[in-house]
Image (tube, rainbow, N blue to C red; front, side):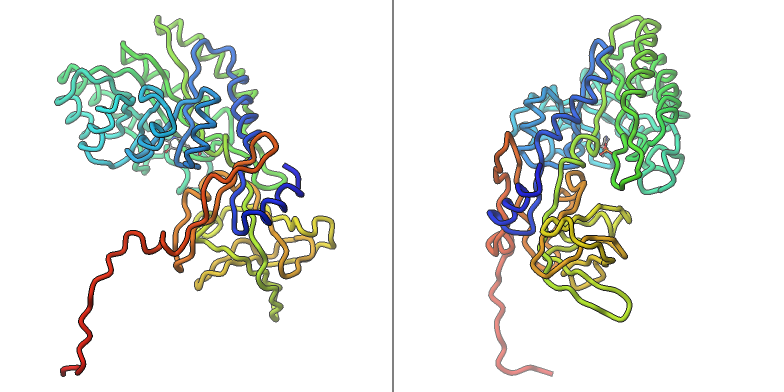
Length: 409
Ligand SMILES: *Cc1c(COP(=O)(O)O)cnc(C)c1O
């Protein structure tokens, strides 16, 4: 997308506004599938929680993707977008047996990540095929918040509990048709990924009726100029070779599945905000924008870096700014950031605003959640209206509080 297109969108739809470039989503999807073109059966299930707008889901449907979901509501959004139930995998954590049964009744692939539910579900529904989520205990990166494969993680059934899984499977007669891992949001190193895959292959040999092996996600995309991106080509080359060899060893055809979120949508997103105030203090220059962690929480929640470009003055002299929101609470997007000179009324663009940005937005400070626009085939399409006061009041029940004339004491 060109700067002039982004500026035109900010004028037409106002700010703050999320803008997604469909072409970038498509090219990421194709990069991934072509890296694994040597696998006979490949299934990409887009992780809905990264960006769950129904028009985005439809775009993935058009690309032939499936969906990875973590709640029955995401499943229902997927069905509303036109996906078949069998193209949806449901990988929840800590949800009730009842919800899992309801999703199974819709016909989606169930993925179970604890022994208690596995035993209860298998006892009641031995005929429903189930995938199991294994925790291979592989550390991915250093941040414990985003490394979900390690020993203290709440996700998955420990690889050391395979004997217990096998006993449940034998006792219930249930059908395990898939085995899964998702080792975290930021696996940088292809070799770490392959190491975890070996653990999964070894576990897979314990189950005789598998139809697929799901390697989850963990692909890294660059957020900063010098960030390293997961080398998809190298991963494709190495894992394809290993997977095809494993399939021979296993003796039955297997599907290789992935469920990326960030890799597919992060870089496609631009978040446009207006600069309300430029404020000089004794220590810094603040640029205050018409948004906050209510719309983009990643910097405050994960200390994430989003590049910020002043698209109203791209080639201006660079100065140092602290970019903050308008929330009445510390609300810092970026500290001491070099940005080309900012004037009040300029439009700033946050990069990598596709994944875990709008989907984590809230109404804190009673602000409206932003509009969303899809840039598709050279045209801007509004895919979510900006909220209004009616949305804030929609579910509130206004009761009639009697006003007492005299305060008793
Ligand atoms: C969140 C999630 C994903 C997607 O992770 P990304 O880092 O966005 O690719 C995949 N699988 C499961 C089970 C998840 O919870």
